Length: 156
Image 1 (cartoon, rainbow, N blue to C red):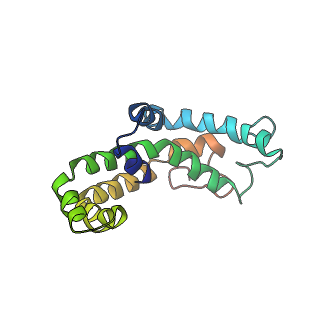
Image 2 (cartoon, rainbow, N blue to C red):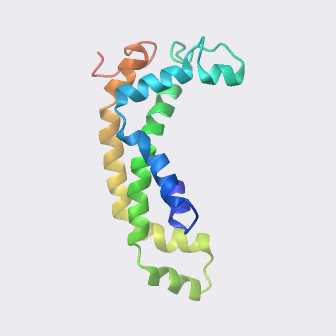
């Protein structure tokens, strides 16, 4: 929602940012898994090269769940952002204007006017998130075939 609020404001290159954030959504989960394998690789991974470490992000049960969550979040954040952005665009401008006339700050306007109006969007986002979490087989299988604490019903 934070990205949607930022992109809802009239800023330069907002279409470019929307495209860049939405781009991972069009990739398959298997391809996302391979991309993140390149980032998380113990020997030649980008993350270990930047941090100057030798951590096995996918093999260590302490890290592999967080690594999978980050990879999945990276893929789905664009879709969720797009849903919230559509919801923010649908909020009637007169509601914001009335709140400003009443003396509400921008933060108060968001939490007391805009956010309650977006309740149907929040329900849709919740449903989409649950459905996508149940379809997580591809990424987990690419990561480590469901071993080391990443066992799913589908991998079992």
